[in-house]
Length: 223
Image 1: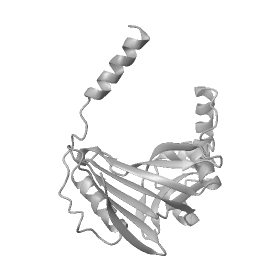
Image 2: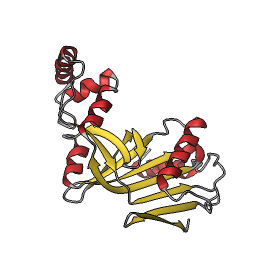
Image 3: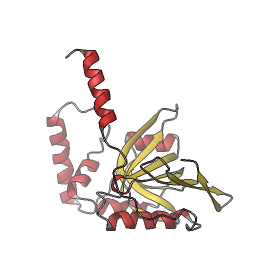
């Protein structure tokens, strides 16, 4: 198969894959809470109860100081009046970008329910005690990797990784409550949140909340 045939086969394969195959819950967009935090919690709990896989997984999008975007999937840790919370190593690429340009976007996709939620706004660091509590609640493997303090650095090979993890294991064994200084919990203090529910005929429902002078307003958008 030549390159042109391979490209045609890939394009045809992609177009043949079914989309919007989930089953959407009932959603009356004319009767929604005044606060997007409330609606988000309702949607997240509904996704959890219905068996959506990893409903707390989200794409975190950040932007460097020179305007270059990057994205990766993380786990949401909490949602409250202070924002959408997640924790990362501040010396990782995402941590550096949040330091350089403290704004972010979160995207949740619940394929089984044909739903998405988009959250964006400024990012602030949570109090250190929240970061420490998050770190200590993490699985051992996650803590060991963070204790290497090398995330996003160039890796020369498995031997280098094994050695760093062994050092981290000794550090954790000596002090089970250790928390690296670089571990940071962040909150996205949203000023825009959009709820999207798909429709097989593309009559998607979109409700966007925007924050202005401390007050939320909302609008229904064209699909």
